[in-house]
Length: 144
Image (cartoon, rainbow, N blue to C red; front, side, top):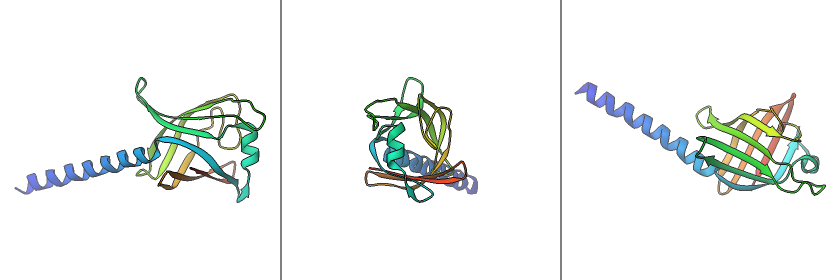
């Protein structure tokens, strides 16, 4: 009887962990626009927009069974060079880990072969706030 109860508790814990993972993914998946980008507390959104577009699209790509982030849209100069990343959730769904990144251009923690770990500060109500440390600088973004 004790073994059955223990097995049920373990299954319940695993199921609730999967539910939290899936719920976090559902809250992240979607189309966003970057509204804030700061480096060490200094507004750097204009600098960001010189290199990358404002659109962030988080989605699941079934063919390769991966989560994808595509950053695109017109930069300040009117050009559009996308950044494509593969990502996953780590640290009990509290961090978004960039696994690979492919880009023609970039800035700070965004660019070709740059793979930061973003701490998820807030993921709800159509808003994502994330922070990372890159080159000894604190970077913060807000997406809506």
